[in-house]
Amino acid sequence: MPSLVQSYDVLLDFTNDTLESVTVQVLHDYGRNTRSIVLLNPDESVTLVLDAGASYRYAVKQRTKVAKRAHGGTLNARSPTFSLMGAYSLKALRQPLTEFESTDIGGTIASLFGMMREHGAYGRYVKRPRTSSIWSHDDKTLVWTGSSSFRYRTMRLSLLSPFLLTLSGVVAQPGVLKQIDQLQKSNAAILRYPTQFTQGIVPKQIHSHNDYWRDVPLLTAISFGVQSVEADVWLVDGQLLIGHEMAALTKERTLDSVYIQPLLNILAQQNPVNQFNVNQTRPNGVFDTSSGTPLQLLVDMKTDGVQTLPFVLKAMEPLRKAKYLTTASQGSLTTGAVTAVGTGNTPLEGIKALEPRDLFFDAPLNGLTNSSINATWDVTLAPIASVDYDAVVGWNGIQDITEQQRSTITNLVQTAHSLGIKARFWDTPGWPIQARDNVWKELTNDGADWLNADDLEAASNF
Image (tube, rainbow, N blue to C red):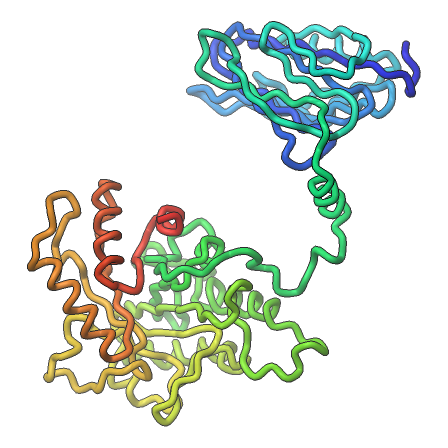
């Protein structure tokens, strides 16, 4: 048995003895950027060469037609004992394995793989003297020796497999990367600052259509840099409930709980009260990279607008009290952290009557020159104008767009811009993806301001 100070390596030979492909992942020393994932087809093997003086997290995963199976835990080689902690068996989902305690490394590993063999996978344990070079075995070896410094290269798992195996070996690591690792692991104070809730997120003029449908409304949109979100509200027994239709409503999902309170929490983080900002004249917005960019909140009133409007105005009071709302007063506009806009059944006359005004109107993009509408359109009344793309333009994104269709888009956009209003086209194609992207490209090239999107990730990468 080697002493703790003697250098030696532990070789784990893992074989996939199941009928499905599995992936094996090991993370060295809980470190950064050291993941290596190996895909093993049935009957393929991989040898893991581990440093006996380090810890490794590992996971074996398999997705079958029945269920996703996982086996994972911690291999701790900081003492002469390997431990399997918090593990789950490969075949019996969420069945914990016993934590292994032994002073004999070989015995521990033998026990470990004895358990694994019962569930369709097996391995062998050997020990070898440590060498200073990268060691490989029949092109299927994952090597870690020495310190926690790594370099990456790839090679084929076998001639019959199209998948690549990442090898990790001990080589010199640039000092700057080592220092980054050290600072991040220590959670150094110099890496933290109050407004980093949206650190590194670049805002984009994307509108999250029916944002409340997302697994996590509002926050998902913000994580992609989306600047505009849409909430459908229904006035039910004095409460503003969120949902696309009546059948989707719950008492827990309200305009306040889903949007107002989360916004207050975010903006409180972005506007800390300390000695550094006592003279700040306007609040920061949600985006750390562009604190002057407001988040647009479209409130789509689904119930009677005249009855719903007072409740929406009341719901905005916490944001109003904190002075977060964009406000128009006596013809002058002061941009805040949140620009609230009424759409759907929002009554135009009710919005016009507000003074000061901190809830605006979503104007009809195809009606800005309609003299029958009693309104003087400008940014203090309607910062955005929208129209049903399919009804007004109708190009499906597959055939070539006609000159008339393109002229319709450009004329509507130019009219809005001449009034200082931003243009949005909704009900754009979502599928086929090529058609969606063609329409997005055309609208962007023609000057449309807001990209109406259901797939926020695709839009943010567009």
